[in-house]
Image (cartoon, rainbow, N blue to C red; front, top):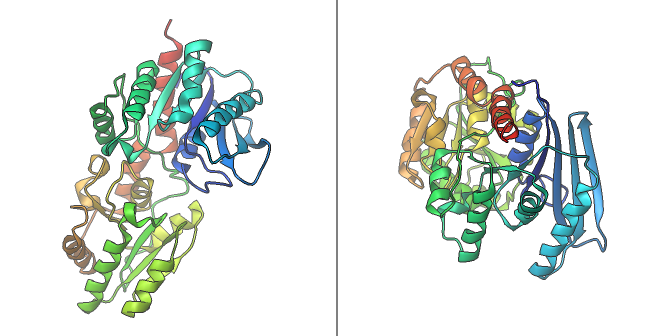
Length: 376
């Protein structure tokens, strides 16, 4: 790490707040990781239909980390919201003393303000990308805007190589470097408990079926239950549990499926330690935090081969299967029930510590920042 301590301004399309909940919490984790080496200010704007004038919320954790969130009156007209967002960024900027570099996150029209800072105020920016949107069709306007954002970014930092390729296929050009998501390895430490007598499978997410394929997971559970296996499937998170509860009731799976609501990071860690395997049967992903969190505590993972998952998935840490292949999910879950051996909890944790810890990710961002600041 360089001795040159900087003030980094994080700006993101997504960021946790009282309106959007935990959306973009992976950006918040990056920001807090950077604050272990530099001063970080987060500036976020969010529309609120319940207010008629702007409201500024400030959250300061310590001398190195603060969040400034500006809520503006949300209109039903997109063009009005666009200008209100820009005005809100300007309002929030006044609350933050001078910064050295902008760390923008998630390409969207919100980042027009960041572009203006670059073009008219000579404030350089790096850009981290998390969105799965690049794997699908984009409008001409969105593609064009993303190209401009990429052109003026000092560095583009996708969280996986697969995402980098998708961005390039959508016409984004620039200086790319993959820097993945971060895990607090002091919270997600290696478990010491042995396997459960009755195997426990776990899934934690926002429970959005079109993304996480909850239906596919539930169908696999029913097949395993019909085969007579003894196991439990624990599923929950900050999403709608009603479709899951209806499935349980319809198929009489109360002895197999256990549900829970929104968890803190500490509670997620405990759930993962208590599980024998984590399931992520998604249709689309980039580089999911939950997989490396599960590895950090020493719990193997069964995951779909989508996005950048396979880039950070050692062969003996679990199983990668084709997306939406319910039969293969059943087969791999059977392997777990029959106690197939995988890497030790400490081996998994060490892998995460060396590649995704706060220390490692902060160092990698620091190297990027310092190289940009040192440019003439």
